[in-house]
Image 1 (tube, rainbow, N blue to C red):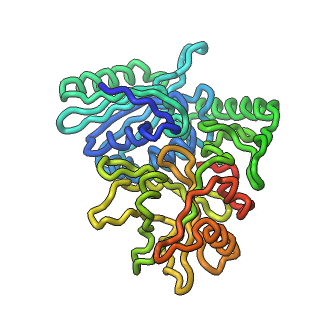
Image 2: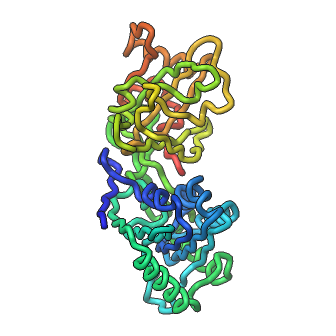
Image 3: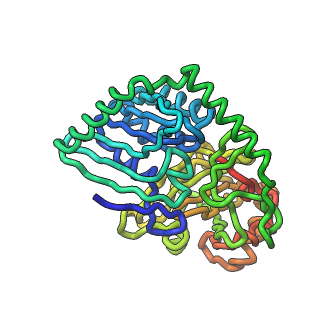
Length: 380
């Protein structure tokens, strides 16, 4: 058994969502329970390509709680996940005792030679899976030990049969509506957030890392806020034929800024921010030097775009947590490109044949581009 502490400020931290997705590899079946879930958490785990690939050939049996946090948006996201992952089944546990709540947080996966059990504090929310400081253990099991776990799971479900309900059951919907009303009343009674002292231009009032915020009657999963001292890489992207979406970076930026490794198997997590402030699906990229000696990551934002005949695209990457970044890609001919180009020229006036790439503080980039959606409150 190994203990993992998820800490988004620690460069060596592991994320619960990645541990769970890693456990999906080569799994035959599995199951798990989480006390709370949110739409963002469902997207990060159950709508991830790796989970979907597992659930196309294997089976995963999920039981969730709706005692407090879970809302209609979360259940809607869960139903979407079920539609794309045929092996995913899900039901809601409603305790028969009014003073009792459903509070477990674990998942197990069976493989041909045994299995994996993950038990911890994180819920199926974006905060629990990525942004919060959480602790969890990972146990690698023999086939005999896995059978005991699977038997315990089956016995639990049989014993709880009267408490397990479909996600569209009338009683479940009534509880979700009650949760929504409580959250709406609570949200309306809270003082509105204020901008941090000395916040740079363009910075929006934002919740702390890991906060799952009530907006009206909805629960939203908020990406950690950008602070004046947050590191931001502004980088010209070179062209390489039709493969320019595999953006190349200088070695020091690849390792020191993105947290990649020359030897260890690591991943970098990218969230594209669109012009309207919406956030794309999490992009998981291997963060280890490739044999070609290039230091690069593929960017979904470049998909379908031809490399410009004049000028160079500029990427803006905001380090929001360990190996985790929001980013935008700005093309030549855009007025924003001119401002970013001028900012880069001041920092790197004579790059020679190299692409201009420089790590700024967020406050400096905000002054050049105050209206960027990168500085707003962003939701997964």
